[in-house]
Length: 116
Image 1 (tube, one colour):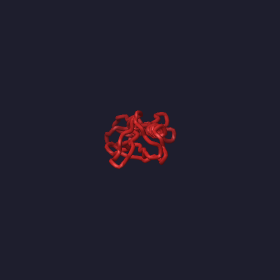
Image 2: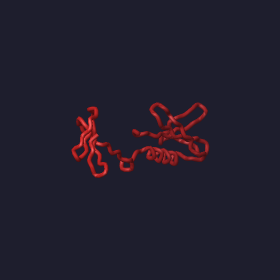
Image 3: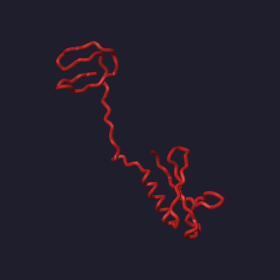
Image 4: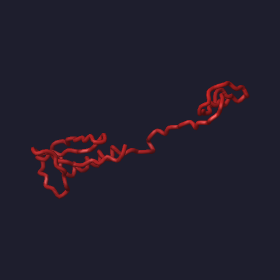
């Protein structure tokens, strides 16, 4: 997932308004909301608990933004076999079988290397 920005908004009778650090937000009367996009073009508003001040709302926004960050070292690494192009299926002992020509890969079965 790409970087998701989380912004603090306040809500009143006229709608949602973006909060700024210079604003005056009376205690216990301002409803703070976090705005972010989970999917492209799909805005989500999450209401914060009553009694939240601007500083706590900004802290919640930063924590939510960090929760969206991806940690590459924790992701599972996929191992993709390297394809090998050959004309047939041949085990290590020289026996060959006729198969269609496609891109193949190698694997070890019962001590023998097979090319598929």
